[in-house]
Image (cartoon, rainbow, N blue to C red; front, side, top):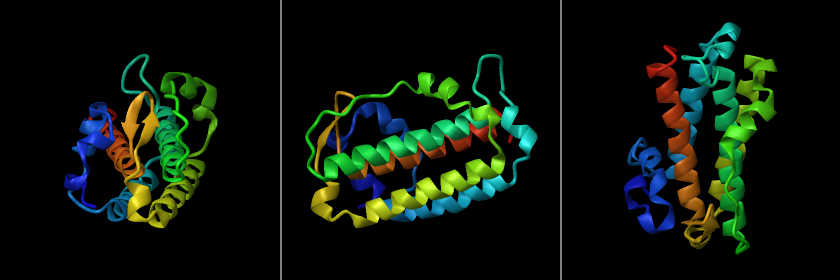
Length: 172
């Protein structure tokens, strides 16, 4: 399914801004292309960049990297749960609570690159494993409708959103 073919009934409109950042391509192609682009971007950073925040009270680069990885994992779990027909309503998550608990500023750039690659590869394998009927199932996450394929597109758009912020706000 192409990005433009994703029915808006399969996700909360809050996520439209993320989906709008994506090219009109199939999910797996987007995930693979983004992996290459993001890893290349990360390899261009320096260890000192990890501690940089663009303003007082804003997240550091390391905290944003951890946030992107955490969010990707959460949306993968949501996709898996719904694809496997577990109709348990899935809770939201408080990303502002995750950041300080992650102790992100203590990690190395190399560790972020390795973890992102592992998590993205797991996501690609997960989404490749879904048959069309599984990908289009709709469940509930954060009190809204969500399909596995929408979770994939949202995760990809979220990662793109933060890459753009790194360039526009962090000067990277």
